[in-house]
Length: 339
Ligand code: NDP
Image (cartoon, rainbow, N blue to C red; front, side, top):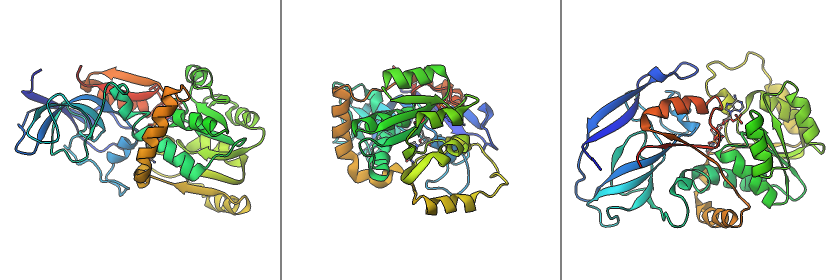
């Protein structure tokens, strides 16, 4: 295993609207050796997630943007290849936040050791990691699904949505998924066991969604926004809960729509006693231990399944990420950086 050169992908330009390959740049730099109390990590897997689109903008958000010429941010599974840190040995596999690169130095802060015998290490980036936790905490804390209620989630074949629907079913609710295309819909219905699924690309999507939710919608776990939200909104029942997790359909939008729909939205929030509550998963950090316990148990019993979409080679990360923003991934998107 050579540790001579680090390949990394940096932000070359801030995208206007949809990002382009030229907004990224691949660089080759030397590797700095770890000092006392540090360790050198070799990245094995890089998670690609929708939030990275927000980090490419300079606008104020819940997290700092990536600087121009800065390494793109991202969650990673890595192996310790050199350790001068008492808590880590060479060969340890860890969850880190090392970004889009082949090697990274760490002082050990924020690393979590992974046990490859307990679960495939890639699951620490998906179903047993940040996306799975997002689904768990957002659905159970804000959505609070009850037996017999209807829970709807979009991007239902993806890392967050797939967990949302399966947890809803574990809680006795009826899970209705929304996904793009026949293959994803078949997977959500047959493999994940959702009660119904609707293709948001269908011409009569809104009608199909209404037919799939004959008793209305009690919980809508918002992952996408845009036209999907427009179809969901009229179907929300009195006292419906809407955890607002993500708005991927809007991430490349430069200007908001001219039509001011806020008065109508607020009127309906009032008339139907709706709860619409945004969240960032880290606010629920104290729930992580119970999440790991519950999710590992559900996976062991077969109640939660997952799908990963693994792309080979760090150099393919930009293209894979652009695909994620257009629904070309099928499952949790991960880049295999090294064997
Ligand atoms: P996914 O693995 O589900 O990938 C994104 C999916 O979004 C695509 O595969 C596609 O699925 C769907 N999509 C993309 N563009 C559109 C569009 N224009 N209209 C409708 N659907 C679209 O991603 P994740 O599961 O990782 O993330 C899902 C959501 O959760 C994102 O919005 C993300 O930002 C959010 N999130 C929020 C967190 C928080 O703390 N609040 C933490 C983690 C994620 P399809 O082809 O089926 O439409």
